[in-house]
Image (tube, rainbow, N blue to C red):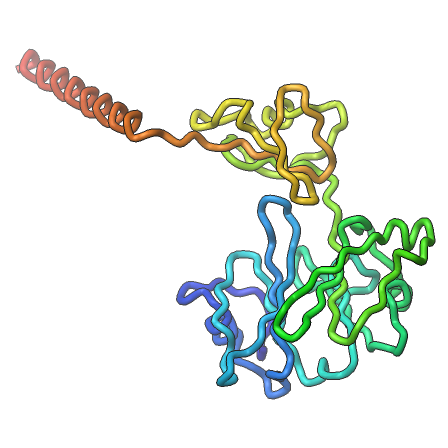
Amino acid sequence: MQRPGQYELVGSKDVTELVEVAGGLRGTATRQLPLLVSKRDPSSDRRTQMRVQYAADGNLPAIPVQNGDYVHIPSVEELQRSVMLVGAIQGASQTDEATSTKRLTYEQGDTVRTLIERAGGLGAGADYKGSYIVRMRNKEKSIIPLDLEALLIYRDMKADQAVRIGDVINIPYQRHSIMVEGSVLRPGVYQFNPRLHVIDYVALAGGPSKMAQDVDSYRIVTPQGKVGTVDNTKEVQPGDTLIVPERHFSRAEITQIIISAVGLAIMTTTVALTAYTVAK
């Protein structure tokens, strides 16, 4: 794009509007490579990338974008034999507050290990267990899990993977804090403490709101995306997301609330009129 950066979208909120407000495509843009769209999953605080081809007529693909999304428009230079590394990589270029990228020229026989070593190694906070390769086969995307702990720490070469031109190696950042979301007074990220339990983190977040469901309805989402139930003694692990669901009222409850509100309004009006009459 002519003016890469962060923009607020107010119209169609898609890639076309994003490119338009960023000054349009540069002359070096290529339609032979797909766009790289990075999206954040609020439940796990992880980013996932998808590669989207241009439309058959050469126009930008109709992709809606949301707050915090990152869109990479490929250039002619990227048509060379290369592999992209995304995430916790030494010397990677920061593309937004949560994502870094580094593109390396592919060499015959390259593997995950050789590329990471050539890139300078992993950065602080790398998720060794949650890393993976994104590989496009025609228009189908495949995910190849990686165990970088076995490969880089225990030097188990069986955990290495051969790479291909165009692969994207993702090494996510591992979150060590606890995220509290949902029906609490101060949702947000809180420092992990091994002595704290579910109710303690909810208390740090200001406690449940009036609309919160009971503790039995609370859920914990692990960094691997597993959802589990909780109780007052449930241990919370680094990177977990604690969700306090909001109560959903039935039709009968909504009707009762409306009747009560109307009754209260009538009573208030009656009292006001009585006070006004007495005053006169």
